[in-house]
Every structure is written in structure tokens, then in C-alpha cells.
Image 1 (cartoon, helix red, strand yellow):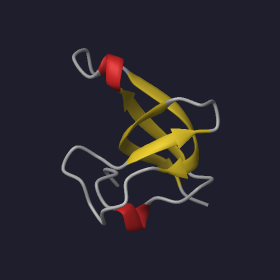
Image 2 (cartoon, helix red, strand yellow):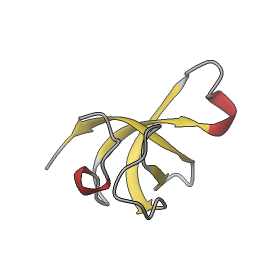
Image 3 (cartoon, rainbow, N blue to C red):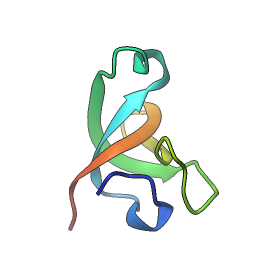
Length: 66
């Protein structure tokens, strides 16, 4: 799962995201999805989410599904 389809993502999933400030380096941040911020059904760079930690970024990979 690469995180480009909104239907694959839901609150509570463990994901890797890339923060806006880390887009050049590609550094990933892991966390649990709190909110889905992208309204469209898909996005070529990944669906934008807010993690429970408050970090906002685009999903690069879904790490664990319940």
C-alpha cells in the first residue's frame, strides 16, 4: 500500500509520512492517523493526513492494517 488512494487510509492506521519540510530529503515520520486532510479520492504524491502527534504530511506507506 503506497498511500495514494484515500479509500486505503482511515484513522487508527500506522503509516509513514513525509513532512513538508522533509520533502527534499525524503525523511519519513511514522505515526497513527488522526485525520485525513485530502478530500479527493486519490493524489499522486500521497494522501495528506494529520497524525496523533500533530504532524501533517503525505502518506508514503501504510505500515500496519488492523
